[in-house]
Structure formats: structure tokens, C-alpha cells
Length: 162
Image (cartoon, rainbow, N blue to C red; front, side, top):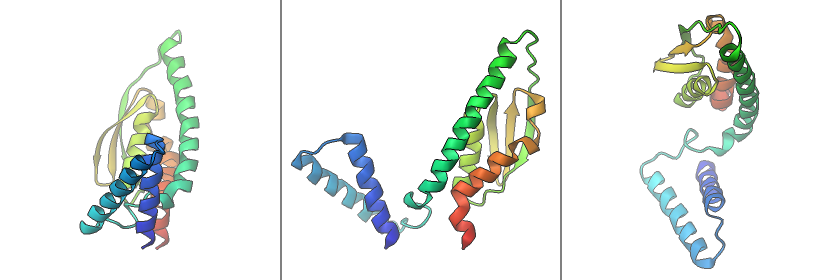
């Protein structure tokens, strides 16, 4: 029941944030839309911990802040390599293993790698990721451990407690 209420609240907030409408007819349409969406989700039996976004918000917010700092640092490193006098670009492919146990955790880790300049997740198969990096010295599995640990913690934290 908590997931149902959380989903109703999350959909309501998302609808209002995207529309900003306060006219009565729009509020009625919003209520109908939210209730219809929740009813359909309940009929498909997909309302559970993984489909309710609200319980992960604090961990994901902290992770997003950390990731933004990493993106800025990586931007600086890539710009220095590209515009530098020596152009020290030495591409490499590396295979990584993730500690994430859920699909959300794996997707968060893979997308975080791709968002970080100089790296792209090429393939995800099970708990293995294939990553292309512009700089060989930054392509070791150890250089991705902090991101993997934090992504798994943000996405899978509650799941691991159970």
C-alpha cells in the first residue's frame, strides 16, 4: 500500500511540475490521469519497490551531486588532452564487473560511465560491462570502482538491507 501511495504522490508531483496548471478542469484531468495510471499499474501487478521512485530519492540525489563533480573533472582532463600540445589520446577497451544487483543499478552505472567525458559503455551483459576510454591510464577496472560502488549504493541500497 505504501508503494501505491508513493506512486500516486510521485505521479501527481511530476504532472504538476510538467504542466503547472491550476485551473479546475486541468486538476480534474490530472486526477483522472494519475488514478487511471495507478489502476493500470495495479492491474498489471507492477507496483512494487522497484517501480516506486520515492524511496531512492535521497541516495540518488547524493549520487547525482557526486557524479556532477566527476563529470567536471573528466571534462577538464579531456580538454587538456585534446587541446594540449602533445594530444596524449591513447584509446583502450576494458571489461568491467559491476557490483550492482538490480537492473537499475547496472543501468545507472553504465549510463554514468557514458555521461563522463572520455568514456562510453559499449556493451552490458550480465554483470560485465565493456567500456571504451580515450586515455589508457584511466581505463583500468580500478579507476571505475568508486563509481560502481556509489551507483550500486544509490540504486540497490534498500534491496541489500533485505
